[in-house]
Length: 621
Image 1: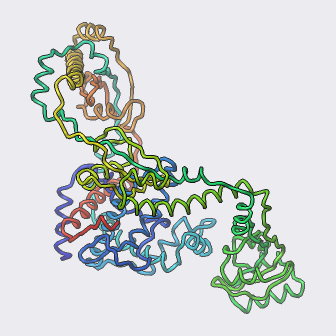
Image 2: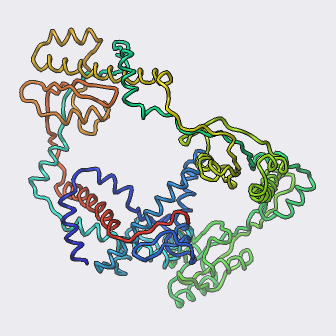
């Protein structure tokens, strides 16, 4: 199997071309970083969301990856986040998980593995865990703890990632490029071109072209299938929202005070303690230092001499103020059991032996009722509204199957509302509403929808009020639309022709004819000068056209180019040069092979997918 796959890789490598694959690989490969890589460490589940060659991904595993990514997206987009993003994100996360399973299976078939030494080397080389340029075991464990990982859990994930990546790195390490190829590539990449251009916009020429009515009618007759008014629906609906429920909640001082009593922990600052410590690796030395301290030794001096904690030893071992949940268990238990000014005995933790000196205690303080009254009002209202919303949505769910929408609205005290007509491509409504409106239950069976959970704690039930069947639009309805479309096409043809004529006169040295045509259309040359391929002096589409032209000899090269649906350009390419600056051949080779291996890697995933038995259970997401 492995031998066949190696032959397949060779075939793919010969077939794939182009730089686009480098961009694609960033979209479909998985960025294995420290944070947000929750994998297969959640509880078991009987709900299967995907099967890859009989290896299943259950819903718990899926949610452990989906939920953190969703939270990060919600934090980034804030109020712009919409529930429509959920479906796209779910598919993206599931595709990533399937790709990783395929790579893991391939790595196993190819006998790839990551040794403990390799894993340790990668982790210790990471800047994430470095302090003052060196790997810090304290920072490593602290970062993992803060992000919900044990060392064993993180190292298992990292080892799997490294094993999967060996497939890609082996492709890179096994490839080569000859020096002449690299030199040619460097020359092409560093090349500069000197040019001027004229740009024409079709919008400026629509008044100079005219479409006759016969052409418009012929277009309609030939393209009738393009002019249909789609099926449309009009809905009636009731909506339940947290914000509306909150408006109806009454707040009294008695209710607030009872809530304050129940939630007092929320308004209490945590107790803080400030301590110094000396961390020593072996018990014998630790006992020696403890004895010196008990005999009146200087804590700061002994911390500087003996402590292994590089972060505190030079500041007398001072750890500042900290609350519970920050320090390792044994250290925290001792520090919070000590009295102010007390010196501990030896406290053993996973890092060694600590000697702790507790300097100050800040007790927790309960904020007064009056000082938090405004915050209390908001919290109480939100809490009460959430409870009411939960109860009302249950009532709504029951009534939607038992009553018509008018009865539902009356029993729940909700307003019965209606929409205007809209089609299945409508964007003015939530996507869930549009989808439900054109579902078989609502559209054909004339039943209420289920309760639709929308963004912003809103819930809705819809019912079909009226519908319009798909119909052919009349010529009168679309005449203006067709006329505008054909006018735009004629204007684009018009400017393309002007551009061709200017380039033709310029290349033939017919300066007078070129000038007359430019003056007639109020056109001027824009001199750009020397540019590289990544120049921002002018839009990228024009730069790409410039670098696609043949290198001029003695005279300029003039060329007319179409630029999208609305523009045309005339380019005067008058000189080409290569920069003298040289880059390392090793670096250049690495970059170029990176492009190639990424392209092959994309095709590996595509081939693995085509050969695998993959089942996706979207309904279980």
